[in-house]
Image 1: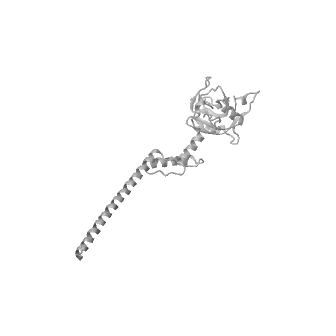
Image 2: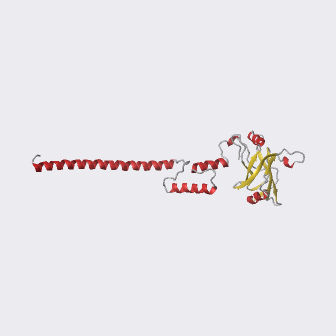
Length: 242
């Protein structure tokens, strides 16, 4: 993910999926079991994984300290992502583009299979094909958190809704549209152009029915008026006063 509006991203892409190699020729490495890697990387759930500056955690004479702490990871289609709690200093430096890329430090088996992530370093000359933390072209992109909030808002759900609730709400909307029934809108939902067209069509039908009833009513009134006039004439004839 990219930094947006001068804010460091909460989620970062730290290991690519599948088979990959470093620019310096090291590899190939293989991410075959991402969930197992995540589990092995947190032997102690209370101990977060450090993010440092240019891998100085491994330098014997110089340790620049932590830039942030990874408290959880997720396996996604493109590899492993990590949630980071940045230090104020690192957050500012990333937003100002003084540090732009990531470099994971991980353990591998002899065949190159990734087994555990030990740390992640902020670098400016990355060895792996991972995206920049900050990009001028990123202003129109949503991070995962913003996208989730947007989806929940459109579906009329609270932002704390679990994935199962979000999926069910999406299925309900699709089912309503496929059956051409009015959508079951919740308070934060918005009508699409298709939904508005459907409602406008229903309104036109109602107007036609109302006008038809009115026309019949006017016709009935005319018939009654004619009948009353004819009856009055007949009565007058019978009385000899017509």
